[in-house]
Amino acid sequence: MNKTVFVVIVTYNGAHWMDKNIQSLLNSSYQVKIIVADNCSTDDTVSVVEKYPEVTFLKMTSNLGFGKANNIGIKEALEKGADYVFLLNQDAWVFNDTVGNLIQVMEKDTGIGLVSPMHYIADEVTLDSNFKTYLDRGVPFHNSQSLIQVTFVNAAAWMLSRECIEKTGYFEPLFGHYGEDRNYCDRVLYHGFSIVINEYSKIVHDRVITRNFKKDIIQCRYKLLTTLLNINHGLAKSYMLGLKDVLGLTKYFSKFYGFGKSVKLFFNLFGYYIGLMFKSGQIITARNNAK
Image (cartoon, rainbow, N blue to C red):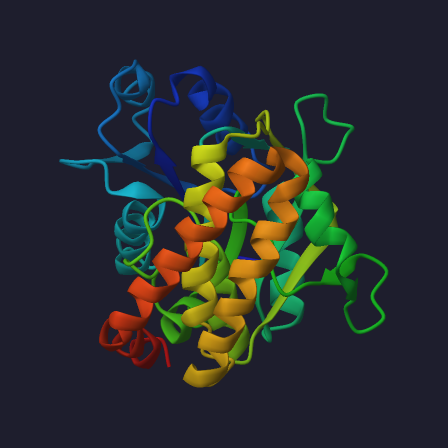
């Protein structure tokens, strides 16, 4: 295989991980080119990345969030001739054969537009709990022993084909920091590509998942937005499903926060949903642009 692979890493105050992240990519048995898009870090991220002359370093003038910064990095990769673009979180690192295994999967089946490796926590043994949820919802891909077909996997480590990007487009700019990966997966599926997880390939996603009410409200709001923007459904059905989400998300989070905060969450989400109804023009434009 002689395919050009660009890795795009969006950073924000990621100095703690960047040496491990970049060095793992430089040690990859499958050669890659690295693009780092920094969202105005205030720690030592810039100085750490600048130690590596091999890295193309793009410095944002403001914090654009995950999706918009990735868009800039992806565009740079495509302009430089990328056959594949590998999106990798700043708090993740690869193993020697990670990239090669992912490319091998995609070269065998061009109908696969997005493939993710297995996501492990820092001990390199235990699966990331959120990732395990997505994995458990999957089914074997064409009776494969190693590929699991899913409708969504979080964007900590995505290998995307050039064809998939050119048909699906970039991340939707209506999203800030959450939800853009779910929206992108919906669009990948709409454009006829498969999404799979390769059980023979792995990364470490070195994060600790914590519960935070303010963060959960933001994530729930963006979940509603992904439902309304899901072009696999008609607009009327999407709005119906969005209202169902208001109730379903409130019920789900009640087990973490109790009655008082659940009521607060419900009214917050319902108010956001009503606001999105008044922004139907924006919603329709984004849906049309995604087709």
